[in-house]
Length: 108
Image 1: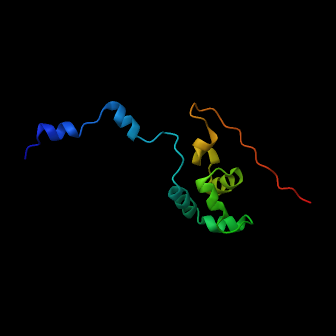
Image 2: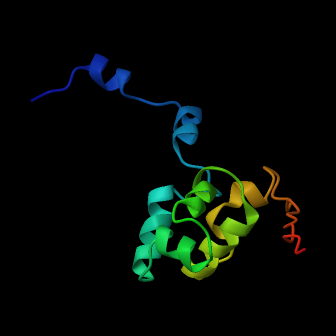
Image 3: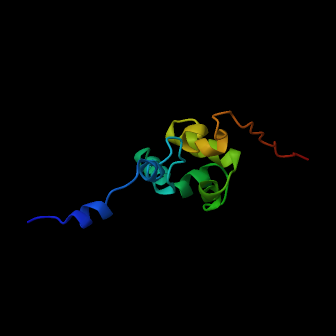
């Protein structure tokens, strides 16, 4: 079986095209990977939420938007730093750290 020159030519990629297809080395973990890592540690996102005194679905917010407290709870359960799971939330594109400040809950 032979492949026509036209077929081969249409499937070639420019070097710049290939680099845009590769994931950035400092990509955030996919939410499914975070959930799988929790399962490997013998827990779930809902169980971790409840253990932390939160509603069972509250920690899922950290999967889709920045929330330093939730990120820390999840990262501690997995055994890594939050910046390893969400590097784009903790470092600029130039690799400079982004300062995160967690608020303390007011106690009356």
